[in-house]
Length: 485
Image 1 (cartoon, rainbow, N blue to C red):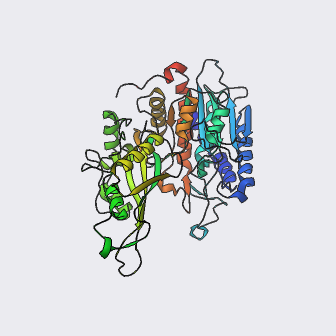
Image 2 (cartoon, one colour):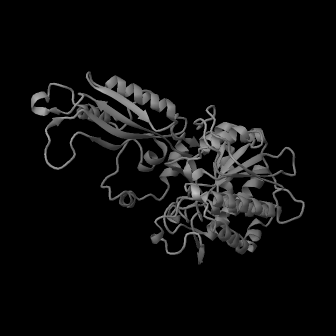
Image 3 (cartoon, rainbow, N blue to C red):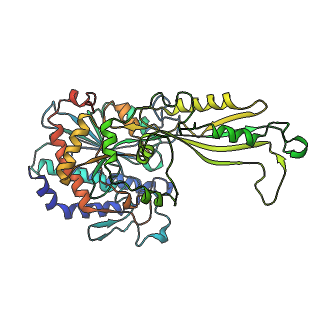
């Protein structure tokens, strides 16, 4: 199987096809672009058919279901998702589901783009256009990968059963996705889920993501007197809501930087020795990193962990905003009647947003002083974290495939945010593998988004190797617990 030769031979066709797809402004956040999102779904459907997929369908998602993770009750039907399937030649071969999305972020501010974001331009190996890296480029390389697997032979089939699920609402929080997964669970049944919607450390330091943090956020409010009071007459004799709130916020961490909510760390899975060693081998320069952190002057956080471990693998609590009382010019000597703060928590593997929300309510109720009415309000159910253990059979296979494609060792990273990956893994009951070649320097979500075509071709090569390597496993072996680290 000359995978590399096939991909190099068809590189020009791949670049032209990606340019054509990028020209469709599939902006899910803009209701006026709903027709373009559907055009995008139709385009990739046609491309997958031409690549050889015998089954290609466009699914309109259902309203969210209350019994599905991430469900939030009745809502209007959403934007289209594309499903494709190509059965393997062997009936007992594993089934692999590839997840990505075809919707894109808005392109504003348009004046900061060097060219029209929906008229893709090729400059050397760089292709510029909204969605080039996130996520159309990384979705499309899978079509090239499967073509390389079958080598263009009529009637040939891939070594594993391939299922492709390309969402149309990822950039708006996947509001209908959990319901769609529940409704179509049988059709989507698989042994491994491959996600190509993350980044590598650097072009010359290929890496795999092994986890994405989740999120829970809240507003905490403290109420005291019914009106603002004169501090000369009442100060020091009645509870001050700002004092109470400041104490609550200060108490969110202990002197070691650990979060103090009840049960906050009960589910947290520690990094393995192998993961810590591989993270430590990344070429991380803390001074350079601080320069990208808004000119921050020092790193900080939970004791006993490196900066990368804190950012990627440890849960956090942050105060995002604080207000109350007088904030205008000049003095106003009052005891304010109320105070408010926005807080958020980044969560790691196995933590549940609902449990963190309960912990915050318990913490506030237990620590609010007498005479202060404290309330906690959440913006929604939160985002669940996900993990892809480095010792799992599928991750080991994907790492080997990437190392073969890139010709060098592949390290491990994690990412600070999360999408619908936790729902994918839980509802479909299959392990996750992140096989992606994006970079932070691709200007994802920013003006002048771009991608290096040669890097996408490496992604296609790695995917083609992965399908062949996974064919050597039995489905039960892929579901096995990770090997010891």
